[in-house]
Image (cartoon, rainbow, N blue to C red; front, side, top):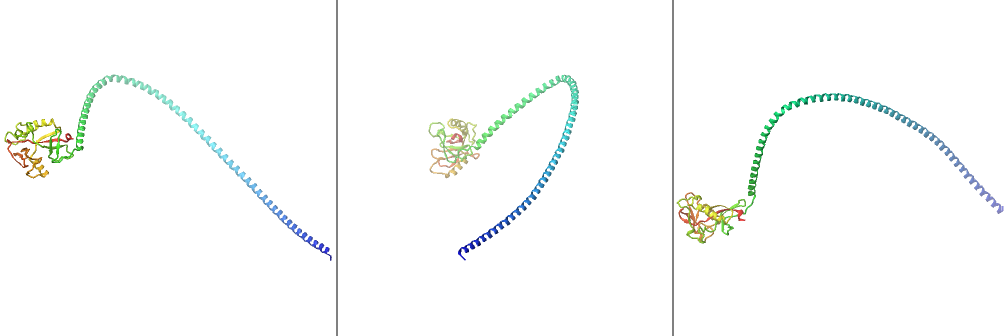
Length: 353
């Protein structure tokens, strides 16, 4: 065979193969299209079923909704009918009440008229009775008023007296409280104190901050004749009689001189003097022990020395009188003898500030 024939055969063979392929493809496509058509039919059929069901459901729901609306409407009609019946009953009851009230008001008006008439009659009778009793009441009231005025005056007077007494007591109590609460300067035995007239004194008894006074012994004896010297003219008797009385009422005693003449002269120079007396033997011994002095001494001190000489003590023992000598010992003496006078004063601390 020639080449041309061979080529023709080959071309025919290829064309046949291509045709077979195309036929197979077309068959496949036809099969697929048939399947799709069948599926679409099935789906359409199902959709018809579902749509028919949904239409039925919607119809049923509409029917149910309508029935509910009918029920509500019936209920509303019932409630409205009930309300109307109630309102009618209320209106009827109100009308009944109004009629009752009107009847009561009419009865009250009648009763009030009757009461007014009776009251007018009663008041007229009362006026007549009161007119008769007024005079008696006036007489009684005048008497009662006089009594009450007297009582009120007495009560006012007593009240004023009570108020005055209360004020006095209050002031006194406050003064006592102030004195108790006040704190004063403390002093101890042997402490030197200079008073307003520049005179020198010594403390003979401890004085705390709660006590308002202090006892002081004069540094020197009294210059009785005021000549600036201490001699026999400045000495005096304890008592003109041989007795041992410290009696400020008897002019013959040393007590009278101290509490009258000397107190007057010193009070003009020094404020706050409350008492004057002589140092007792008991006080003297206490001072000597507190100061640590011996029974006798060779060198003098503020308690005893040569310039002081012998000076009077006011004995704390009955029937005995003592003097202090220059060496610090004290001894018995006679009331008619003459010795120097060394006073003790009790001073208010306020005057020392």
